[in-house]
Image (cartoon, rainbow, N blue to C red; front, side):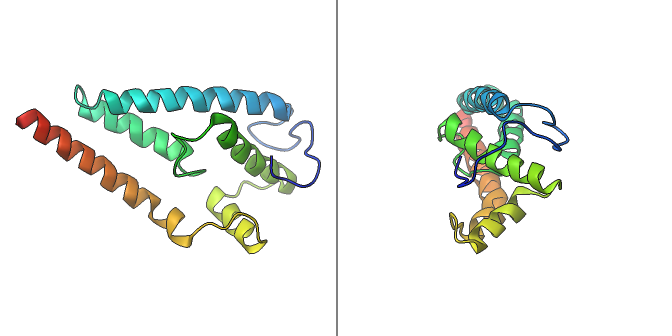
Length: 144
């Protein structure tokens, strides 16, 4: 974790993780992220066989993890889990369910990890464009 203060041992208020130990949630997130990264890779590999199913899988996984980091599929599950934990601990501390984009902007205001404004605003457009390109290439390969 990147917090300079001591993190609590468990979540107190959080509506999803209340009463759970932080380390248990981190371990579960690492497992989920690893599983989803494998599923993402399989969906991209299987795009030729079933474009529609692959697209649904990719979009669903991008929505789930792409919010935290655009390169979630290539990064270490530990690193992504730490980002998620930092964010969820802040939600628990404030006892408020705000979104990640809002929190990320606050982090830039405090001088931590600056994030280019275009990155979180254009990510869905870039993902959609990339998926469309993959679909077009697959169709062309199939037709030719």
